[in-house]
Image 1 (cartoon, each protein chain N blue to C red):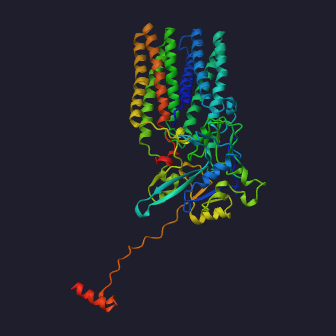
Image 2 (spheres, each protein chain N blue to C red; image 1 turned 135 degrees about the vertical axis):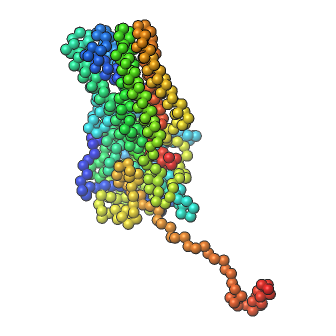
Image 3 (cartoon, each protein chain N blue to C red; image 1 turned 30 degrees about the vertical axis):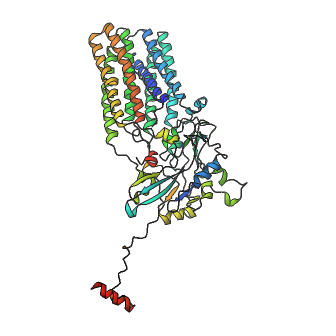
Length: 310
Length: 246
């Protein structure tokens, strides 16, 4: 599948924003992060900035961005529509959460924070389901895709929250969470890659043409000599050796190093922790961009069976 | 609404039956499809760089050729590929705007180009590659089963069939109601063992494909003519045969 830049950026940025909102809304009422209203407002501002920039970037992917409002209408059948509805609804408790923080009204901030956290999680779940519900793409129609989206949003959100909390002198809890979700993401992605590498394709050139009753099927003549939309959009392939290298980069730079830096930050604390967790958060987001790009580049669509036989 | 209409027993299901035995891969169906549809319901079907390298465009029908089987049992099969107007079209249910829909009255899957946002998700959801984005207009386009021909009262009745069916010189394409078990197309499917493409995807295509007919069994190789001397009627030649075989 063609890794469209706007979608890769959207799911990474918005995912991190929703992850940050999730942990902020959940941990603040529990008193596990700095209680300073300004800390809450800065973290909330960063979360909403990432979410909004990501959503706007996703509009760039559309043929008719001005009609995007129509996308919230089909929530009964479409996961993309549900994602849109959930994304917009999340703004409501998030803004009320912000008002609660600004006016220092814990009775408003706490429930709205929890509601925003839930709503953020639902949005990321919907994003994952858009991909997981597509049967023709076996690398997406996989049981680890939705857990992957949730885990990686939680990981990048925790890394960002740990960075901000370090500047307010208390990044321990989110740093531990970044460590745990980083380990979770590492294991999940490793299991996912092993899964898609060993899983046999469900559809074959034989079933796609129904000619299996004669024997093995090989494409002979394509219907057109030049490329087309289907091949550009669905026929994108990445060389295996590049994929293997990029996977190692994701595991090392996206998960390994941020985890190591979070561990060091927990041991040192203070100004060193600020620097370490900032580098960690940047690495985590960079690693996730590569991971998301791979998620597309490694995915294959059944339409290519008609063109290449695989 | 992108929820699918309820399927009632005896529901009309308009579709195509494509005979892979008689298709000769002439591309006439694809050409007439493009010709009709570039000025019909989904007009225009744009072409990009039409007069230079990299010419490409939107087509609703694409004719592939495959080789199947090995040796004497091997066949070359021409294979037209277009929208199958599935009973379970995920391309419709994934649509966030309701632009994609399946008609309740005849099962035709259509796109409303006035409300499509061009997100491309329906093309991802189609296992058969039946939908192509019109990157000029920013909306998705697809086979309409020539909805502007089959119900068109301004053309003679015998021409109210899809353009691809009308033009096929070998009558490899048949159009009709596959929901009616007594229709000509349903009978054809029964008689010839018509099948679904990628049934494992669960989309339940309405269009059916008829398999190439089985070849007559290959006979034993022809034997060389080797007359014995008793078969030779001419006495001179018989004498020569005897002399030469001595």
